[in-house]
Length: 469
Length: 158
Image (cartoon, rainbow over all chains, first blue to last red; front, top):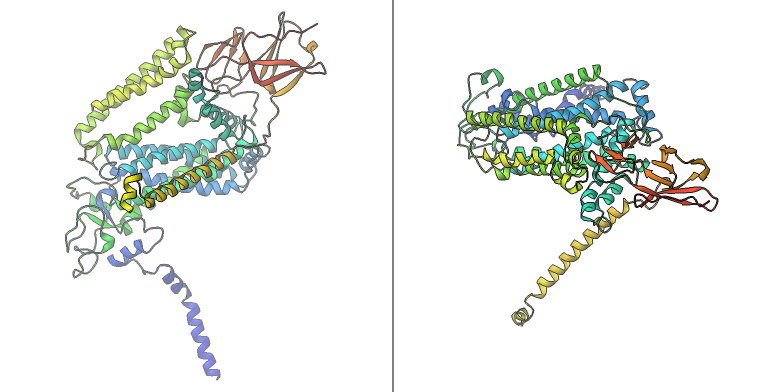
């Protein structure tokens, strides 16, 4: 009896000892990633990793192809979310408390200043990286061959990135926030310029309606802050995640990132990646193909590895972890030294002088100074539409996955850059030197300035010259 | 019989019912969306009234300009009477400042002359002239929601 008891206790002790191993085993069911097969399983059995393929093309892993820009944007978003949730512990979105709570976060809360700086700079960093990522995708022609709509989703993500940054700019309820809110509300109202010119405002006041919808009233006040907060922490993030999910899903379904046709691994690639243990796929040769190795594209041959791919574990993951820590280190270092601005409490009586847009809207601010409607609604809308249409206008299917599609493209890109810069600077210099229509003819109808101003000329120039590439 | 019915009306009963239910579904969906938009338009506003008293006429001696900062109006008092000009820039809603020649906006550089007429910058409209009326207790009332034609003066009946 006592012996049996003893045995039972021993068995229980053994079980206790092995709890760590069995817990890990139940968590990572595919075991230690020691063989090609278990490395593959480590990817497709893991909830967080399975969105990525088991195998990754070598071209994708070349740092100079992507520069990690897209994934850096994602990591900055993750940093922003985490720091944002921390800020929500203290922030209170009411016009009585918002400014004071932000001040508390900055000067009283332990670590609050650093977290706020991280949130601010990671969020604004997203803008830079999303734009650079967009440029990379454009110059490598990666919006072609079934990826057309993913480019459009990318444009929506760009707009959401701007929106989420701008709505965040309004939350501290300091002078910058308040006057940004007033100006944005008036941009939203600016279709009134057109309806006024046509004399139909009293029947169809789309501008006034939209402004009231945004502000929750006729003037910027407590209702407005609630709405901006709702946009910042709920509506924009929901759509951001939705479109991000679609963005990644489509990349995966399209067979990963673009790569040049006739890709050949170069000597330097062996420094970057670990090649599989054996040629011939990760599954025994009597199997034709592992399903998880298949990607959109040409049918792979039996008994051969999918061309020029290596296992994502560890090759891709190492690269991603490196980008993540670079992002984190960059943001923390920047946030440690540079403080997010906080001006005086919002004062509806005194506009900031000069009232400056956040840096990512300085271009828009310049356009706004000709016409609120054209600069704030018309031209940005046209520009976004033009960007979204790029994959549908450029039907050329060759050279996807090559920077600048080779040497000729490079010279075209440089010429476009030079011509664009010259015309833009020329227009600016002209306007600064000589003014615009109203300085010459004070009684000129507003509609004419709305239609013809340096902003519209600039966009017109792009539209006319652009297609001659 | 079915084909005969088809020839008469051009659409079968099944198609008609299908299209009708699809149309009903779309219409109800639109109604729900309209309802959501309507819900977000507040029925009660927590704002101050656009009508406010500015005090007795004696407070505005001829030849003075008073800037009522918190209300966004300038009250001019001239020989012809009083007039109120909105200080909210028609471009993007900043508060304009009084200058020697008229008004100027600090945000995007709109300029107006003394009557609020645009003379420079991006402002699409002239500054609004606002209605002044007299309350029964004798004090003056300005309504920022009521625009009146430029040049209309409030005559102090003496």
